[in-house]
Length: 365
Image (cartoon, rainbow, N blue to C red):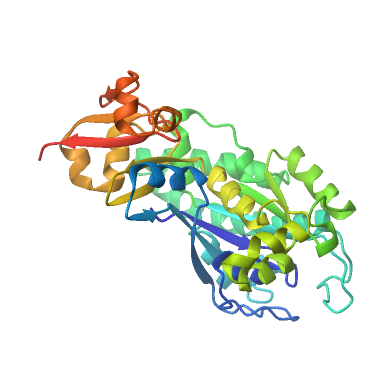
């Protein structure tokens, strides 16, 4: 499934360094000048999940296939990006294709790395970028609404609904609020999402701190975390420099390196999981001798929808889903033990998939 998170922020906040570490490559040029990224870089990243390793060990799987999420590194936005300053318009267009935004905030001091506005203030930086996104949304909506008003005069019902939703979004934006703050009826949510508004997308703030603050954060990150909490947004503290160093080490040396810094796991694991959660995704598993595999579905998906992730024929000919909760699979040391304990279930078309379900689909095409 092509879930994408766009990495945004002002220039020189550590976006490309974060991307390099996420993908364990150096494909994104990290340099101390604005717009060092001139084309969006895309990295497909495995979502860390220790449950998959445990399932594979029990099922004696020949290979392990994790679920994945894509991160896209976008060039730094600057004040005036919505009007074409810097390379604004080009990259704002790329952001419309994203399902969520990871907003990197500079929470470190370094005289060797300039700040585009000559000061360190993550909350102000966030407001600058958010303002540009809101202005871009307003411009986009006003342009489209003019065409819709003409179309609505012909009695087009879809145009009427779209115009009503756009009017709701414009009112928020003109009041200095992001489009994601809209109160929507259930039937309005999908049409509203299809408007492709930048400020409608969920946001995860990543506070990029120096090495000394990697464990507990610092005063800058505390302010940023408080802002995120007030917005009901996600947030994580990471030292992109540490993560880059870690990514370049042999796998056997990484645990020792982390322990020497007082870190239990790579900070990027938290970012990846938070990005996954931000999109409202859950994981179900299949496990057998050939492979143990993690699959991604949207929270609330029913069994046939989960089957379709594996193959469209599975949904078309869906009969039932043989299901074992992850905890029951582990407790029973596999499918046989779970069956003996009465934890093996046959679920039909209305079953809502739960995070961690171990599933096998029966179908007939």
